[in-house]
Image 1 (cartoon, rainbow, N blue to C red):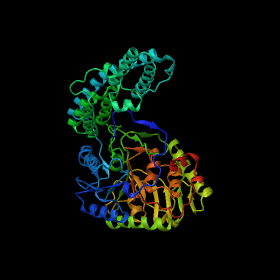
Image 2 (image 1 turned 135 degrees about the horizontal axis):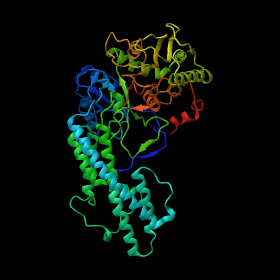
Image 3 (image 1 turned 90 degrees about the vertical axis):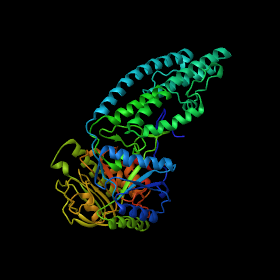
Length: 539
C-alpha cells in the first residue's frame, strides 16, 4: 500500500525508463463543454487509450476558476476517479481537453475561519516540535549508549530520517547483546521510541527495526496502532483526508489521525496544512497545478520544484507526480487536426528548418536576459554543430522579421508580448514556443493576439505558454527541451516535464502528450547530447 506516513525517500535517478504510452493516460473533460467529451473520445480512439479513462469535472467553461472551485470541483473528482478505479499507480500523464479552465485564481487573504485554523495549527506545531526535540535527544542518547562507535558525526537534518538512522543503529546493537533479558529490554526501549517518533510499523520493518519481543511490549489499548487491522484502516482514512487538503473537516481528520502515526508524521501534516492555507501568490495554470494532484502538501504560495525534471532528485515511496498536457486550441477542428497530424508525422518524421531568435539582452541588458540569451545562443550553436538541420538564427535585438523563412519545424524566440508576429510559416507537426508573459490567457477568443493561440491557429502541433507573468527561469531551457525532442526517444509530454523547472506555477503544455515528432528520423543520437542531459534518457 502506498503511504504518506513517514519517509518520502529521495534518490538521484532518472524518472522514466520508457516512452509514455496510451495505457498511462487519464483524459479530463468538462461536463459544461460537451465538445470536450467529443474531442476526448476522438483522441481515445485515435490513440487506442483504454476504456474507462475519461473523467468528467463540472465547472463553468471559463478561462479562470477560483482557488476553492479548483480544489473541490477539479482536483477532488480526479483524485476520487483515480482511486476508485485503482489507476493512481498506472496513470503517469493527465490530459486536459477543450473546455477545462486554463488558470487557477490566487487564493488571496485567509478568511476568518482559516486564520483561526492557522493559529491552532501553529500552536500545536510548537508543542509537537518541542516533543520531537526531546524524543530525538533520547534516541541519540540510546544509540550512543548501545553503539557509540556506530553513530556518525553528521546525521540527516530531516527529523524522520535522523530518527530512522539512530533507531536502526540502536536496534542492531541491541540484537547483538548476548543475554536475553538485557537484549529484550534494549529492544523494548528502541520500539518505545520508534513508535513515539515514527509509529508506522510497516516503515519500521522496511528500516530493519525489529519488533520487540511481546514480553517487553505494552498491552494494546483501544484504537492502538499495535493492532494491524486498526493500522490499515487508519492509514486509508488518513491518506484520503490528507489529500482532501482544502476541506476543513478533512484537515481536522488528518490532524487527528496524524497524531496516531508518530511525531514525525504529525509535524509533516501540520506543516503541509500551513502551506496549503497560507495566502500568497497562488495564481497558477490548472495543468501545472494538477501535476501535484495527490501531493499531501506543498507550497501553494509561489511555485514548487518540478520533481520530474531530469536533474532533480525524485521521490520513491511517495505519492505519484503527474505529467500534464492539454489538447485545446482555437477550434475543435484544429484540435482534431493536431491529433491527426501528430500521428501522421510520427510515421514519416518531422522535417524543416530550426528557428532561433535571440538578442533581446543587447537592447535591455540585465543578468536574467543575458543568461537566457546565452542559452538561446548555445542552443543555436548546438544545432549547427550536432545536427544536419537547417538553422535560421538571428541574434539582433529586434524580433526576427516576418517571412524570414518558411515551413519551420522548430521555433523558439522572444519577446513580443501578446503580439503574435511569426518569422515563418510552420510545417505540419511543428513544435515551438515564444518566451513572453501572458501568452496563454485564452485559446478560444477569435480576437486573441497571444503567441500560443496564434501558433496553434497556424498549424503548430506542440507549444507552451504562461497564463500570467512568470519568471524567465520557469521556462524550459531551449538547450534541454529541443535536443531531447530531436532524439525521438521521448514523447512531447516527457520532454516538457523533464525540462520544465517548476510545478504549481504558470506554464502549460499544449499538444498531444504522446507526440514524438522525430520518432522515425531522429536528428540526434543519445551520444550527441551533453552527458548531464543523457541521464534524462537512461533506463
